[in-house]
Length: 279
Image (spheres, rainbow, N blue to C red):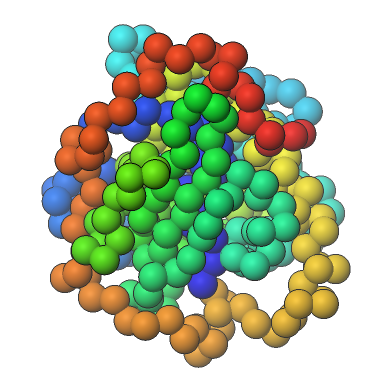
């Protein structure tokens, strides 16, 4: 399969919030997103109404969709123009687990748990947080779809009985996270990243750095892939997927309020900015 698609939020080590996932119908039922969900996600990425620009520099823009200032939950959306990287190449980059080890320096471990359908699976991802924060991990249901000329990858957190929270990690919760990749001609693309998190203010600064890292990974991917099993792309060719099957009945929605409450709100923002996501 691929990397877990909750990044670049993976380096934004936030205290995750107690809210229901918009990707789980009714808040309780685990389901596989359909075409309407992908279309809705694309609309959220492209529609600027209600979004407030927080950063616009070096080809990267960051927006937030705030509620009131007192409300910790915000949607964060970022966009970067990727010159000389075709849309299908960036799509491969975001799927290729083996390549991710080359460019995602925050990753501790990632692996695939099992497949649900030809375009949906369940997987695990853990990442390093800057001291004194505890490292985080995810278990997510991820789904992907080429839609018209676009590529979309979305995920939300689930519980799997064989992969419970670990004592050495804080189990993070993805309420709604994903990527939209839009072709911009034949040899360039525009990448959107949208996530619903508690950003804790200064964490907005991490997103431009992470987006630039993905762009650079896209520039280098064709040469790397040419030397590393170039025909192997199970996200494109599902017959190559050898993962064991997982049933939806094995999964349940991961709510943050069922997890240990980790209070890191008093930590200095200086610590939160000590990410090694370099531009």
